[in-house]
Length: 374
Image (cartoon, rainbow, N blue to C red; front, side):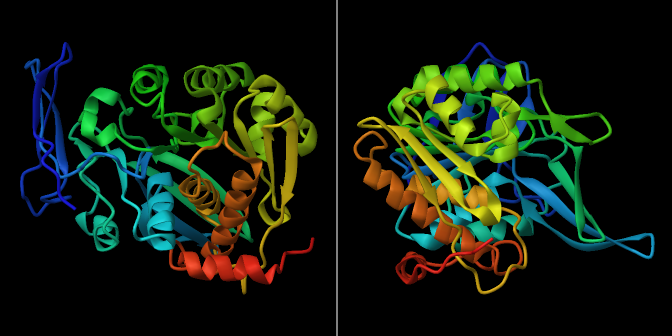
């Protein structure tokens, strides 16, 4: 599906967007070249159309998996990562009929071949912006004695609404999936005006991370994380879906018990939908809809567990893909959460995104009702 989104208009900013030249050195003909100029004109040409079913926003990353063997680092795999990767592939695999795109920023060091998997799935890639002055965000996943350490040695520039055509921001649903706080207040304030009628899901992970200069990762202060979520809630209210695991939720609530955390979140953000994921222990769904309703969602039993990377991204994106109106009925939310849990259970059965399955397979697993028991 191709649309003419050629747009020429004026901004007070000094950002010029134009087609990325066809060169063999990096991401090729379908990417967007990002450069700073002294022009006040912003030009954008894209095949990205109106009325997307889901648009995912955040940095695409280069993930490097490293195993420590006999005190030596052995690189096992280098592949595309980030929420935009797992979320877009999960939704498009489960329902190929949905019109899915993503908005991201990368550096010129992103290998062009990494984009091929998205094109093959017919995921719209024209929302990729290349910042010539910044590297692609990179994560190193280091495994030693079955323990994983994650670091972020490189970070691309922050994502801003003015980096993209308005046509790119016309979607029924959005999944905000930052991975290194690349989405901050300037984006949120502009996006809140544009997408106020859309369903917006946020993954706490990338909003609350603090990346140190040496690549170490920890959390920003609790009050800062809570302030960011409050700003998003003020814009989107009942259309906001807030998802985080128990550790991430605790980082803004200061509560470690998941049920007490749910009570806190529903009191603090009374119209929002709350999802608390617990890995192999399942998840909790909460919403103040016809009174406070909280349900435990079981973790569906996979045939094997090979790689759990991206399970949270898969959960939120497939949950959003099943929503038409988060304020209509708790039953719709409950069904969507089961679908998300089952979709995630397939992801972990193979490395990276190879385990993802169709809607039919996911519904079959739900019908069987076999859960993990811990």
